[in-house]
Amino acid sequence: MHELEKINKYGTFLFIVTLISCSKKTPLKLVVPELKFDSSLQSQVVFVKKEFRKNNIYGKKIIFSGDGEKRQLSIEISSQIDPRMADKLFKHKSSMIDSIYIAQPAPYGSNLTQDIKANVEKGFRITPIIVKEKNQTTFLFNLKATERLAIGGFSEEQNVYNNQILLIYCKKEKKFYDLSYYYPKTVKPLDSPVASCLN
Image (cartoon, rainbow, N blue to C red; front, top):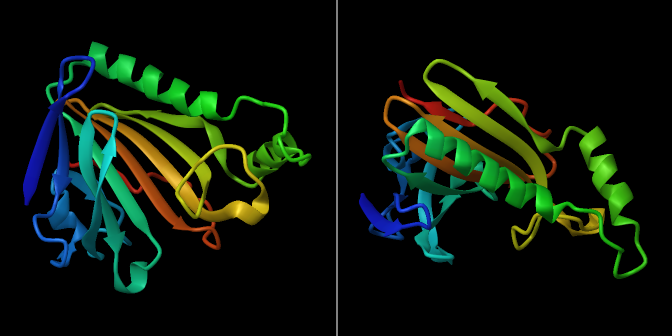
């Protein structure tokens, strides 16, 4: 296992957990041992498909193999985050997601605003479910995504994946996690987080 680190605009270190070998298949719980995954995922075998870059953050796109085909997971881990900084990260990242769904005139004559409202009625959440516990705070978004993993306003025909975005702050470890889990649109939107803090 290998960790790449960068400094984000808040001056904190960002760690992206990756596998050294793209061909090596490993259970998810060993790839990201800092988190407790849902029982349906923790033993799933995964491999790294390709490297990605997001602003100044480097990482890997994790692909599920076998029963988990057509499922993907990307993870960013920010270390040495105090509660005040965590609040800023929650607000910043939530605002970024919210801004994607601001109603705009449809470019091709379709009513994307109605599509977005219909998605919310079907269990998709643009406004996060917020769960505050003694050891952690979690923001959960249930969204839709295209074949290229883009979220936002698009037609039903372009929808390929469901997407759970999880923002998790683990207080004891002072770590902030940004997870994006993509799974087939045929699966009902997940009501509970796919991951949580170990302690």
